[in-house]
Amino acid sequence: MKKSQIAAQLYTLRDFAKTAEDLDASLKKVKEIGYQAVQVSGIGPIDPEAVREMCQRYGLTICATHVSYDRLLNDIDAVIKEHQAWNCRYVGIGSMPSEFRSGLTGYQDMARTLSGIGAKLSEAGLELIYHNHKFEFEKFEGKPGLGWLLDSTDAAHVGFELDTYWVQAGGADPVKWVRKVEGRMKVVHLKDMAIVNDKQVFAEIGEGNMDWPAVIEACRETGVEWYVVEQDTCPGDPFESLAISYRALSNWAN
Image (tube, rainbow, N blue to C red; front, side, top):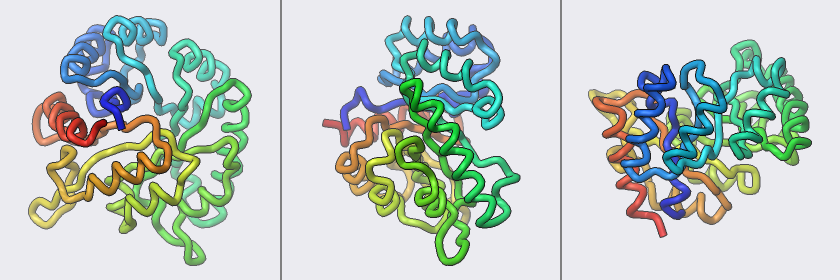
């Protein structure tokens, strides 16, 4: 992992990215922290061209996104156009719609749908990546839902964006899952887990209990390209949380 591969997930800053003016100020702060890339997710209704211009102004690569399931189904041509303009290969779906979560049949239906969307994106030189939460670790016929998605989606058209916190929250081992999706994960979500008052909470990298040297090594060995810092909720200033995580990850950078 190089410092240039560490990115900030803008969902972390969603309350500071609702308008173009706010986003501009936030991107400036992200660059000042040291980040050289961002994942576009959770921002307000801002013109894609304006987003491109802001990121160019601050020298920030748009490494990946999260796009709504509805847009992937019904507005895919515009999604493709945006990503090509941003020079962004990785099109993320942030979560599985609730209607697919009811059982094994739902996961199989989701796999077919993802494979179809992914094929369209592949034709345009893009790649669909699926981001997990903890519910995907519920087991069906002895295998977790995420395992069914891994085995049932078309490997040529569907990749994964494992979230280390949610893997651990689901009772699984992030290191083992990084290795399990080898060859199908170029973008990973990094967030730490701490225990506070006997509850699992989101934490900055290095402030929780995850084995980061092992996680980073597994990502290196399996060909991850982008190491994206995300923190769903922060104890204070989210910019400071991003800074703490960046400094910690920099210690493991080449």
